[in-house]
Image (spheres, rainbow, N blue to C red):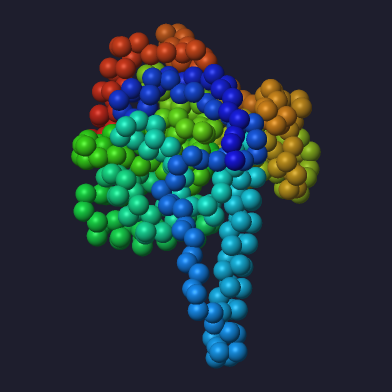
Length: 375
C-alpha cells in the first residue's frame, strides 16, 4: 500500500556531518495511519508446493490430528498477541511523539538506506535476522533498545548477541536510550554518536545498521533521516549542549489542592511508563516536585489521581498535530554568558546551521567522548 508523504521542512543542526548525522535533518510525516516500507530484509515467503498425492484425514493417527490442531491454535494465539502488542505500542508512540506513524512488529524487520554505508531500521527479532544483515553487507549492528523494550516484544537479545559472535565480520554494539523520551535522547545523543563513529571506523568498508524498536524515533535521531519522527528539539538541544556551557538549575513544580496522588509525566523522564511523584505539603496545601534540570525547554503533564491534565494557570504549549496541549517550562541559567545564551537560541531555531568553527569544536568533543566514554 502506498503512503502519502509530506515534508514538514523542520531542520536541525548536526552534531557532525560525517559522524553519522547529515548536515540537516528533514522530518517526514505520513498522512495515513499506516507506513509501508519498500524494502525488507525478510524475503517474501514462496508459495508452498501442492503435493499431487492427497492425504485423507482418516489416514492420520489421532495424536497427529490433535498436534496439528494445537500447533495451529498456538500460532494463531501468538499472532493475535503480537498484533495486540503492536497496536498498543503504535498508539503509545503516536501519543508520545505526536505522529501518525505506525509500527508493525509482526511483519519483521524494516529498514531504509540513509547513506551508502548506513542503514536505519527496526529491531532484530531473532538470531536469524543477524544472518540477513550480514548477507546485506552489514558489519556493525548498533542497538539503542533498553531491556523493557526487548521484553515487551519477547526479543531474546543474548541469543542474538551470541549468534553474532559466531559470525565473521560483524559485531554487535549497544547504547541504551529510553523510548519516547526526548530528554534522554538529548543527554545520550553525543555518547551514541561517538560510539557509533568508533564502531564504523573499526569496520571500514562495511555497512552499519542502527536500530531502536520501530526504527522511527531514536535510531533516525542518532543516524539520519528515514520515514520517521525523531525529536528534533532533542537533537538541537544536544548540539547546543556541546557548544555552550551552562549548569543544571533547580526548579519547583506545584499543584494546588489535596488530591490523593499527583505525579508528573514528561519533563525529563519522557512519556512512557515513568512518572515523577510529587510530595504533598499539608501546611501549604500543595503538591511539589523539586527537580534539577539542564538548560532547555520541557513539556509535561500532571497525572492527578490517574487522570492526565494540564494546569491552565501555568505556561502552556501550542497544540500539536493531534491537538494535544502540555504545560511547558523554560529552564535558564542566570550565570550563563550572553554569548552562550545567544548561541543556544540560534541553534534552537528552525533554520539554524553550524559554522566550520562549530563543527570543528563538536568533532573535538565527540572524539573526547569516544575516548573517555563519558559525557
